[in-house]
Image (cartoon, rainbow, N blue to C red; front, side):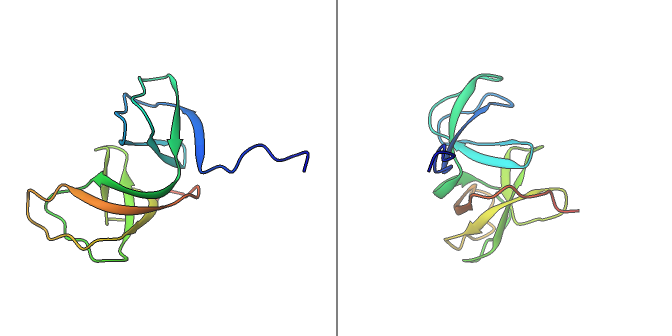
Length: 116
């Protein structure tokens, strides 16, 4: 197929801020997890699909299958839809203890508009 470019599960995009390897980043309505450290405004490789342990709000409980959104203001995951961008679903239940600041997310790999 002459028009095929790539699978799209890994994309190159300019980092909108400094992103550590394994950290999330949103550009427009695309979300990905950095494969390596990427400095602000540099091109980097980002995974758009797969399962990742990502930073979340510590005081928020997650149930298996909950929709997970990216809070681009605070650079973390949340189950709050309003003003945030859908990135996938939770794969592990997490209690709302303040110290539970990591959640396991299956990325949906699609561009998604921020919730109203």
